[in-house]
Amino acid sequence: MDTNKRPDTMQRITTPELANAFIDEQITALRAQIGDKKVLLALSGGVDSSVVAALLIKAIGQNLVCVHVNHGLLRKGEPEQVIEVFRNQMNANLIYVDAVDRFLDKLAGVAEPEKKRKIIGAEFIRVFEEEARKLDNIEFLAQGTIYPDILESEDGVKAHHNVGGLPEDLQFELVEPVKLLFKDEVRVVGKALGLPDNMVFRQPFPGPGLGVRCLGAITRDRLECVRESDAILREEFAKNGLEGKVWQYFTAIPDIKSVGVKDGARYEGYPVIIRAINTKDAMTATVENVPFDLLQHITSRITTEVDGVNRVLFDLTPKPSGTIEWE
Image 1 (cartoon, rainbow, N blue to C red):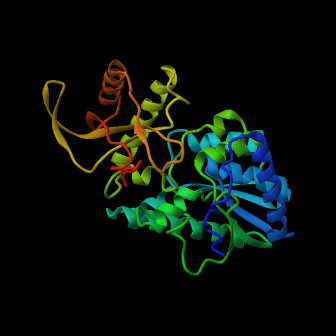
Image 2 (image 1 turned 60 degrees about the vertical axis):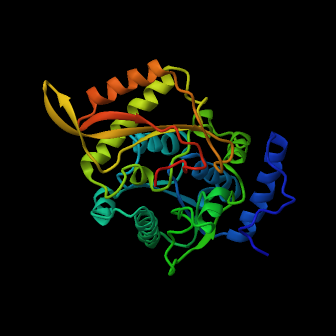
């Protein structure tokens, strides 16, 4: 039996009752798989890893060790938010790892998207292995793999960090309790588990983070341009009632420059691409109809406030033909 294949008879999880049945089933399965061993979880603070964390806390309690790796590819303010929510509010067993320079040094000069994803995924595993060696009785690695990750990796659309980026000599047995669920189902399960709405309905964020939104070879200046422009976009969407209404929105920056004008003089800068889409399962997507005056306001803020940027573009491409992420 293919454990990575969603059964045709599996009912879509759309109600609290179905979510609770799934939770009960998974808690039983997790306890049977793990026993009294410890589990290491990559906790990004995103929907998928947060739901996996909540499931594991219910199943094995303090035998879950959460590791938050700051690889330098997170959105503005996210490492601080993860520490506040999980360590300070949820009392999770959380280890914080500052690995910014380690990741960016590994990625220097690497432009090919799949190679970037695999470097990031493999380096994540290495960080976990190092943390595990400091602990006793760690035999499992938990991941927030969901079904679209598996489908896209199998179809060759793109390798996901938790599917295509795992090293062959992995030292852990995998724990992936939501790997047969679509994103909308994960959210229903998260609500049933009692996670806060701002976590359950947080927009999806790729495992490689801004590494696949700083297009081409990652440079620190463009990485900061992505981080700052994304923060402006999220702030403006929240202020204008689009937070929670739009499934996913972000900025990306290609490795090209164009001529512009700044302070009355010629100025070469990067373009920022805005992506705003709606979907149920991430397999298809439509483009959000963002008001033009809001786009003009966001453009003004980004070109004024973000150093190194002189243009803003809006991506009108649905999925298909484009994927949600640019890389």
